Image (cartoon, rainbow over all chains, first blue to last red; front, top):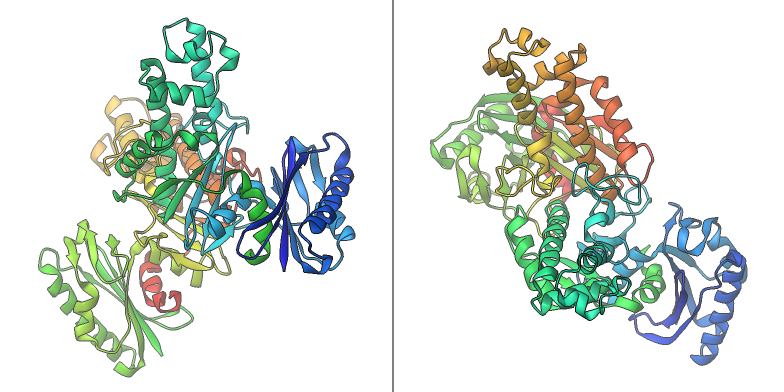
Length: 315
Length: 315
């Protein structure tokens, strides 16, 4: 028996045939049919199922379940994509539309960050955990929770929004309309903005050298790499970022006392340079004063496919 | 069959015989034997059990379980009071000591805020909830979580510390050694401090009139009552307090999306004046933009007894 997992993003649709043990047997990555309506997406998903079945030498009857991860909010009943801005999906009955194509196969929808947390539970950093936190640091800040050994989608089914915990009362405006959210300080976007400021300032800095003075080329990796190389301007940014990030994690840690906290997204690729400092700072800031286990997420690009495929086991 | 619940505080020990439906059948309230060592406390608890059995016309064999709520931290195995500063208990083997007196009766320890959350679940504001948050606003800020329909004592068993979520990065020093914790802004202590400032300033204010100019007589109720009466100085304090409190609750709400949030402690007695505003502000600040259910805690002074007694059912 096999499961099919889809991870729909604003640029690409990733798809895979996944077995019960979370091995990806067949994998695909094709462009998302932007601006063509959700019906077109459903057609693409249907074609992907049949072509993957052929490649995997599986039959239709082998499919135990189909799961779909989307970058947005799902209604509490798990049937409708309420809002997925990057997909242009608003109140889209995605489950019903796919169920018409695949009658009798259980179909599950999930937010992509939640699915990623589930993937870590079954195959990654959260194996064997009852309580775990995934924090994804990218353009924004997202994440997912494992509570009671299961993916947690909010007590009322609205989801979890780790990026919108308030870190600074009356702080800078967040995209959500509130002020001082974790997302305004802990995203890769914040790192890039600070790096751009350094380049624009004309100060002597490894960041400026790496982008040859072109502030449009600044990315989070360049800022972090420059800090790693000891550049004083980049280190100022890095130290401030660590201060914010450790506070955000300490806040979640004192509320949930999790067994493992995993960091996903591009920022998590900074390695020991970031994680050693982060573990030290969270230990110091956490009320519990023990060393929380803070590690890089393992599943990264496959997280959505695997998590979506395993939604069957999360019921 | 009956359960016995103890709520040990730095001033009083409350005790009760509680039935399976959380009715308190017999209740006691006696002074805590301060500074006399935990063995003395154990003797007092033993005497209370026997005298309550007589009053309730119960026998020793009727006791299904004994639960004890303490204002402090319990080790993850639930046997030792690691720290309960107000009791002078540090690494006290309270379960073993009581088990010697009551062999064959299951004995449970819990943090008092956790026990209070459990009491709300069985008999109060959280009846029927799977996910709920109790926030207790007093000298400090504490609280408890209900997750999966059970009392949650932290994923690693260290407890939950709602008062030490960081609300203001690099804010004022907290008693815990960290900066900007919820407790530094949302406790009754904060309200009192602001009220004292008003009295000391000599400004014309209802607060000053109520305490006849004696700043030592300021308490949280006086500040809140003065705001209710429309005193501009007290309203400034109240508005600022609501801003902090709504941010703290919004942070917890976006992480857990709880069915109910209950507020305990003296501040919660301020009634609709506080709760209507609080519900409005949290709705505005929460990413989910729906009206969270924020209500006063119901169990109040009986919370510890009932919650401790029902620890048996929380295994």
